[in-house]
Image (cartoon, rainbow, N blue to C red; front, side):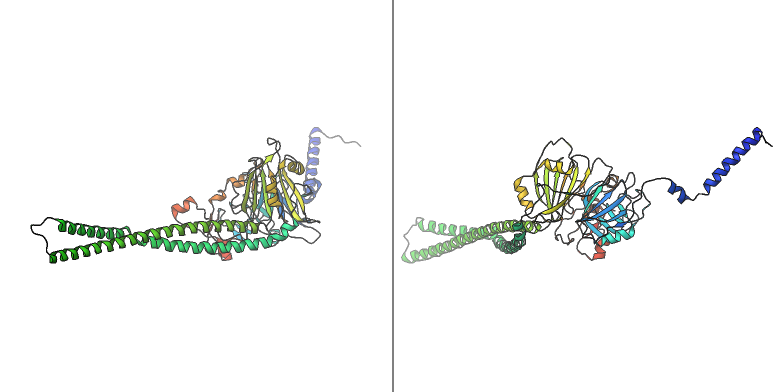
Length: 506
């Protein structure tokens, strides 16, 4: 028997059928539903299947939200990250680790805990452990898994290169005659030369101190001869001369009767005494003048000797510094924007010269070349990382002409961890005397930097800082002068550094 459904029954059947289908779909687990839909692969923590060497660089990909750590032989660790959210974007560019703090707390974000912090700008961009929601969510920093941040903290060094790339990037091996080739003889002679110049600088410093002491003593002696003392002697001499003149006038004056022998003898005695007194005061005055002039001449000579000794001290100190820095990796930055080449060693600026770049109006990109290890034959093994559009790494080198005298100065003692940065960009405002080169891509968002005060506003006292020397200069906040306070934070308390203070802006 065949049954026919009315229009109302048909509509009811369709509704029930659709409801049943939706009910069946709702019984599928979210995991099964997600598995049925293809999507991007989320980065996970990885460790290379080999013994890890010392980390040379970290490359952060903003696009895929992951960080990869490299040693001389390739990648060693990978992990997901969370970079800056919209409006507070982590700036893309070239940085290095400038400070490490195991248990850092932010003074900008409500004492937020930032464990295993590795700062890459003094205004507050850093790598540190933090929550990872699976997307960019920080205020500009680079959050890493807590355990990963702790593992990385124990292996990295101050100065490790940190490259933040808009897209995925990785170092590739490169060989080019323009990359530095050290001299075996120069490398062998460098330590002895540094020791010799350091000894000369120490001797010059002592000589300058002695000369300064002598100049101070001579200046005090010259100052002790006051004008009043000379004026007093001059007045006494003038009075004695006047008395002698009066006696001569009295003797020569006409008389009613000639002087007898007794009067002549008496007048002669008076005149002799007056003349002797005037002569004695004249001698004293001449001696005082000569003594004062001699002391002034001695003070001037001592001051000139001090200036010469101080100049030699500065000269030998600079030579000793350069010789010591020659033992460190050399960092070179070539900017198409400024048409200059800059050199830093030990974070100290040593060279700044104009440079010729072929086709200066054509973009060159941003490239980081790193000497990762010594090569067979005494050379260096290099890699290149490109993070901005322009030439490829080899073509970028082809457009650069480094002056031979500069190349001879910096290449002969180049060692592993030496680097060359070529970029269309100038140095960023975050770069200062306590950083290596900082180059930020201006065609990428920089919200994470925009919300922070420039690093030049940072207060840093004089102290021994990570072995880079104990004389660096204080830069004051304007408001600190206004309100008259100094703020001291956990880094200094934790590590017991005295005599300086740090006002961190984050």
